[in-house]
Image 1 (spheres, rainbow, N blue to C red):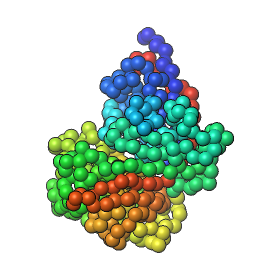
Image 2 (image 1 turned 120 degrees about the vertical axis):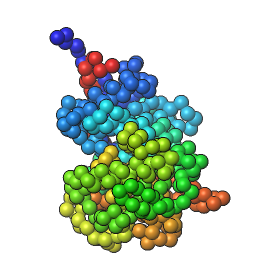
Image 3 (image 1 turned 90 degrees about the vertical axis):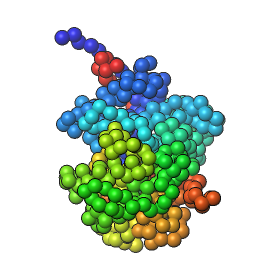
Image 4 (image 1 turned 90 degrees about the horizontal axis):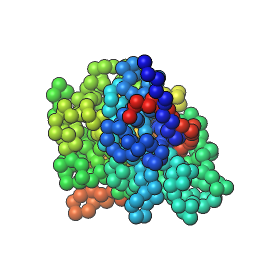
Length: 397
């Protein structure tokens, strides 16, 4: 058997919010992987350790969950008034598939720090002390994100006392502004935030029946249903769902039919090739529960409870893009999220998730009969975990 050397590719392993991923500069990728296509996908799959029929990603950088099976490619932006172009790839764990259909809001928190430290932001825009505002072009969905990156003595500040439920250790706070986050151009609603034109729809799902749903394109396409309607309380932790094959199948069926209704796919059979989007989440009014860390969450600590599925499993906390969808839906009267939070108008919501709580703000307004959201704001944190070179077998490409 011929022995081939391994390729060495410059990379950085970073935590952003409650996710981790392998970050690359575009120019550091092998030439064949610098453009979209099979070679790029093959490389990222091998880096992460997929497809893995064992579901562990032992032979790669992935952590065997949707939150840790992620890749990011960054380049100096060619667009006016932007610093960096950000492309996100969600790598499937058990199949040879990289989903490019949406953003990762959690890893968005790490983009600005990586861009500054890797020379992708003009030095004139980065203060030695204070806050650098990095203008990020999110290439998957064609949206702008502003990352407010703390600086100290000419370096990105990573340590601090900001605590984020779902992350064990405190770090420096990174504020993110998602500008005009509605996913325009998706669905049959002509780019509207609500692709059906309704804040609540009746979704007919074979084997499940008819249930109310809010279908929204904001942050990431998301399907919201009431917890009670599908037999849950809204206080569930991961084990209650991820160990139940029937529950997982039910959620995937709901997701597939919701995706068709949103115009994201033409037939439910296409959902398997669009795993990252749309998300499906269930909501319930506030109530006390115990988070996965053992932390007691009181009913007065939150406005609404939300649980969300990511890549076929209940997320351990909350996806950043889904948090944008939650904040946006909460700001719009009549959505299921808004109703579960008590109804009325609001510009922020504090929701309970399996790991604790999170506050997100959104500014929405009604224009010519259509809801518009100008921006959504939330705080995360980020940290470099390792940097150097990732290796893959030379015959990967």
